[in-house]
Amino acid sequence: MLTRRVLTRQVLTRRVLNRALLDRQMLLRRHDVKALAAIEHLVGMQSQAPLSPYVGLWTRLLGFRHEELAGLLTDRSAVRIALMRGTIHLVSADDCLALRPVVQPLLDRLLRTSFGRRLDGVDLGEVASAARALMEEGPLSFAELDELLGERWPGRHALAQAVRAAVPLVQVPPRGVWGASGQARHVPAESWLGRPLGDGSAAGDMVLRYLRAFGPASVKDMQVWSGLTGLRSVVKGLDLVAYRDENGVELFDLPSDLPGAPLPGPDAEAPVRFLGEFDNLLLSHADRTRVIAEEHRSRVFTVNGIIRATILVDGFVAGLWRIERSGSQRAGETAVLEIEPFEPLGAATRDALAAEGERLLEFAAGDAPTRGIRFLG
Image (cartoon, rainbow, N blue to C red; front, side):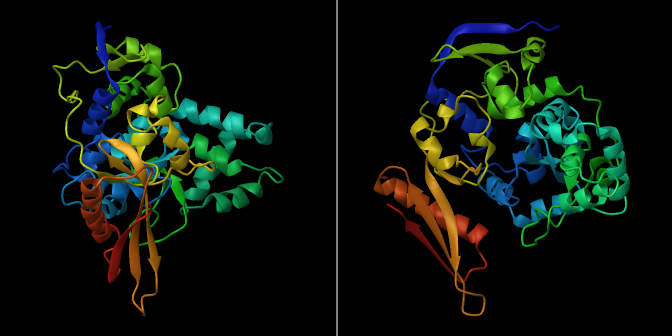
C-alpha cells in the first residue's frame, strides 16, 4: 500500500476550490483537444438530455463542431450508457468497458430499492439471458423489451429495469446524434463494441481520474459523484495529498508534483460560460457551494429531476438560459437566447454574456435565419 502525504494544516478556501474545479473542468479557457480526449478527461458527461454534451463540449473546446461528437457515436468510439449515479453518461468506448463493472453494485442497489418487490421470485439471471438473446436480433426500447419478456414472465413488471441493471446497455444512434432523432433503443455493450467488459478492478483509477476532473474533493464528494459507497477504503490505498476546507472537511487530491492537479489562485480570471442541462460541474460534489450558492439551487435543480442550463459569472452559477424558437421553416424561424440572471448584472458582464451568447446561438441554432438575445430582468 502506498503512503499518503498529508498536509492537514493547509486550508483551501471556497474560491480556491472554485478555480481548481473550473480549471480541471476545462472552463477557465477553451482547450485545443479532440472531443474524445475531453470526454475521457471529464470521466464522461451526463447525458439524460441527449444533446446537452454538445453544448458542454462547445463551451470547453476550441473549434468544436457537432459532427465530431456525432461521428464518435456513429463509429462507436463513444457511447451513451448508465454509469455514475445510475444516470446516462456519454463516455468513450474504453471507459464504458472499464467503468461499467465498477458501478455494478450501485445498479444492483438501485434495482433492489426501486423495483425489488415487483421482481420477487424472478430469476434475474434468466431475464438477463433472455434479453440478451432478444437484443442480438436488433436494438430494443424498454417498452419493447417489457412486452417481449412479458410473454415469458406474464404479469410481471419492471423486467426492462432488471435488464438495465444486469446488462450493460448502450443506447444506439440515432439517439444522441445532433440533427437526428430516435427513440432510446439498446443493445449490450459487448455486442456493440465487439470487446468484453473489464474485470471491475478500476475503482482506484476511477477515483484518481475523478480528482483530475473535479478535485480536490472529500470521500463524500466522490461517493455523490459515483453513487458508490465504501470508497474510503479505496482512497486509503492511493498516494494522495490531504487538505481541509473552511468547514474542516478533509479533502483529497493528487500530489502537486503530478500533472493534472492545478490549484489556481483565488483571483484567476474566470470568463463567462454557458453550461448545458445536467452538466456534471453541478452534480459531482456533496458540497456544491464551490460553484453554486445554496439560495440558487432550487432554481436550477427542479422538483422533477431536471438540472437546468446555467450561466457562470466569475466562476459561479449566476442564472439560467434557454433558446426559444418560433416561426416555421417556410416563413423563417427565429431563435432567441433568453438569459435569466439571478441578480442584476453590471454592463460589462451583460456585454460579455451577449458576446458569448452570440457564439452559442451560432453553434446551437445556426439554422435559424433570425437570431437574437433577450435578458430577462
